[in-house]
Length: 133
Image (tube, rainbow, N blue to C red):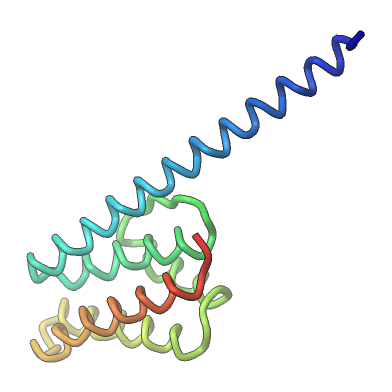
């Protein structure tokens, strides 16, 4: 004969598995949406939006959680990413940030902007391969 406590523990385990599965699906769908937004930002030639979405996507991959933030928080998020990426990866992100800032101020070249897309997409692929989902 099982007690009510045993029954509740079994129910809790069932719901925990269901909740974890649902959250995993939500996270995967959100990542796919961010990847789509990344493509749209590149096609629109908007390096600031590209960097913004890229940073949110990397945060999601590293922390296995979602983050919704406006563009004004991109520098803080980049600083937070320093803990999760290597020094070379962080330097590339910071260089891309500097290039975006120069572009916004009208001082950057189109070549710098074009290189942002390639470098950050390559970095995203690296992080995707080295971090379990």
